[in-house]
Length: 183
Length: 154
Image (tube, rainbow over all chains, first blue to last red):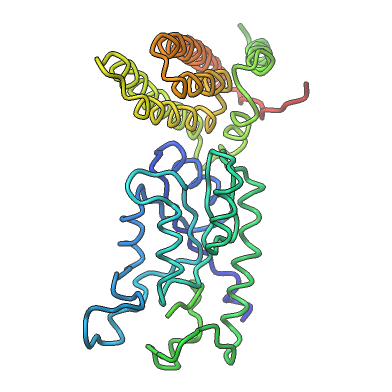
């Protein structure tokens, strides 16, 4: 269990501004995170292996359980709010509505200080809301969320998952060193 | 000019940029993030900013030049510019953008054109200043010295 907590956390950063992407990448790397940065919500969803039919209303009849596992190990998603196309809020909702992705902590960033926006995001399940420009002190707030998730996952008998469906054999429910196990 | 003098000149110059509000603490943060494995981080971010902002300024000018001005579109561009200038610490550019957004809200073309001029002025100023700053840094490094770690002691 000691070894698992030393492994790098993998953060997926989403921002359409190339300047802000570079900045968040640097902030995260300085804090020893592994970073993948993308410039849109749709690219983020692709990266996460998100499939629309994971939502409750599935339109495909019988689907093999293994089609819906997360393709990559992402421990946290940090996303800008204002983006063309799908916004960070849209991404947050999709993540929280997804059986396989909902346990990934999501952090929202915004250059606008709008309390109703902030509340909406927090209510929808965002862990934190950072005002831009993001500071190193903000990034330092992320580790506790990640360590908490990792600690939860490495306790074998705790079941965080709602619902009856077990898509994986019990072997896969033990966390890999990469971070969160998500079904 | 010998090394100590150059370093002194850089320190004075940098200090003046903060004092005049041309740069704010965000620029300092960029400098502090830079390290041996990313020695050109600040120059890279700043270059990205100027590439981006020049394009945005052109887009804004074009949008204001239309028969029927789409203020939402202008505002969207200004919002972007405000964000990126905040991210690099170009405080006066950012403030000029805030004022600009108010003009967009009022849907006043004349006002917006004036705001655009203001933003362009500040943009031009910070660009020149940063070019000078980087040149001074390069001279120091070329002379075998190191650029002192930035501080805000004033």
